[in-house]
Amino acid sequence: MVFYEPGVTPHGMAKDPFKSTVVPRPIGWISSLNKDGNSSNLAPYSQFMHATFDPPYIMFAANLKEDGSSKDNVVNIQRTQEFCWSLATYDLREEMNKSSTEVPYGEDEFELAGLEKQYGNIVKCPMVKRSPVKFECKFHSTFRLPGNSPTASVDIVIGRVVGIHIDESVITDGQIDIKKTEPVARCGGPNYAVVRETFKMVTPKAPVAENGVKASAEPKNQ
Image 1 (tube, helix red, strand yellow):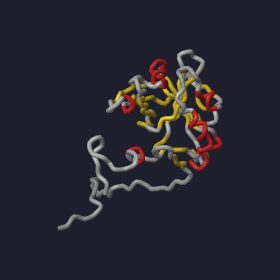
Image 2: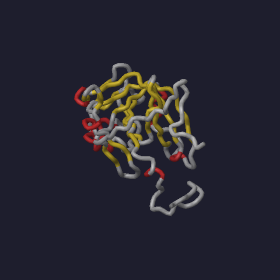
Image 3: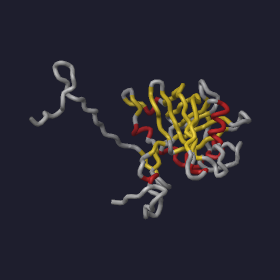
Image 4: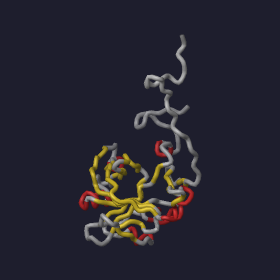
């Protein structure tokens, strides 16, 4: 069994294994409007998740630049108070990867990746038109988590989902069909996964006694 203390003792592996253990990680394909009001920023973040559901919130963590400043998306979001999320699918994997290219501020990653824009019904920034599921979000807050270096520090951005777009072609029996969306996820380094299969498990309920008090699932030893 390998044991190490991060930043204290060596792990003895070729690369830091931490990012390869918290997997698979959903991808936050986040877009925002640049300062000129015409060009847009689009980038994938693998440190992403939903925070709660009623009302729905999502959050993503963007590592700082080498000079300690915030990433362009974060700057845009804090200025405009809005952003969008587009589902990264297997069909869009190459475009998603191209949009991760670091380019000077003002260059449009939609154009770089050859992606058509779809503008929101509520927010002004664009989404990836070909993506089957998209969120329009209003900015809620940012929390900076310090790291041991500028690029290890992150801005954690939280946004409220105010609009959801779902392509009817990925709906089966009233639910989003994973086999049709084929979402991709990050698995550490250059490795990704695609979700095509799922299985069901129902959360078990504790036994309830006649008086309404939860009973032990197994009798205690007398």
